[in-house]
Image (cartoon, rainbow, N blue to C red; front, top):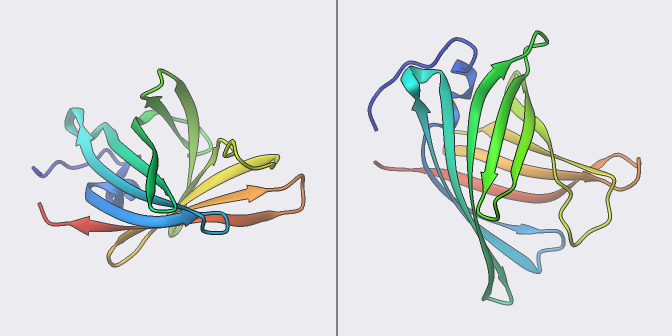
Length: 157
C-alpha cells in the first residue's frame, strides 16, 4: 500500500490502515466469526475506507457472509467525534459517530438480531499485532458486557 499522510483529524485512526484477518466468537461461542478488513487512506488522506467481509460459522458450517464498506471522515464534529457511513451488501446505509479516546475508538452499533439488548457499542483498540474489535451489549440498562471479540492481525502486503 502506498504511503499517504492522513489529515490531522484522522491521524489517530492510522492503526486501521492495512490488511487484517481475524477470528472470534459471538456470545457463548456457538457462532464463530472470521473477518477480513482492508483499511486505506482515500483522497489524499481526508477519508479512511474500511472494506470488510465477515463470515459466520455455526457448528463448523458456513451460515452467513456479509460485506460492508465504511467511509470514515465524512465530517469531524465540534466535540471531536468523527462521522462515518457504512454501506452494506444488503443495501443499507448506517451512520456512526466515532469517539476517539486515548488507546481506543468506540461507536454505537446495531444490536445483534439474535439477542435481546437495549444498545450495543463497538470498541477498536490498537495492539502490537493489529487491533482488537469488541462488541459490547447493554441488556436493558444493566451495564455493558462483552458479546464478541475479534483479534485482527496485520497481514504482510
